[in-house]
Figure (tube, rainbow, N blue to C red):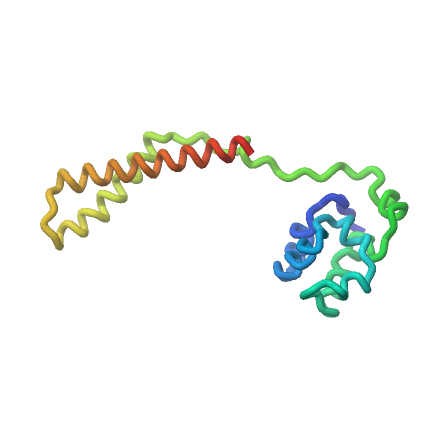
Length: 156
């Protein structure tokens, strides 16, 4: 039997088992976010939730049964189950981000924009130096926004 940390978000468990995202959203709208909270519900409570049908409940029951869990568990049962389980932690993404060479990225963007603008220039009369200047300005704006986004991700 597989075991799962009871703090694991239901979205990770249910979607992994092909339960439709809408069902997960209906559960989360009712404040059910973790496996523990899901297991503490009884079948009657689940049936009362908007958007949760009998077939969905059967699927949910079979998914949690794979982990030795069932609906209607009390705190004592859940505590016994959780013994010796490490706490759940989301993977840290910000620390694993690759180092970005912004000057290289700026060049790549400017080159792509320049190529696209040159194609357009062939059908219109636009001076080439203006096309190059516009490409570099576009690249600068995009790189600046990407750098801002990266800083915001690191702060989270």
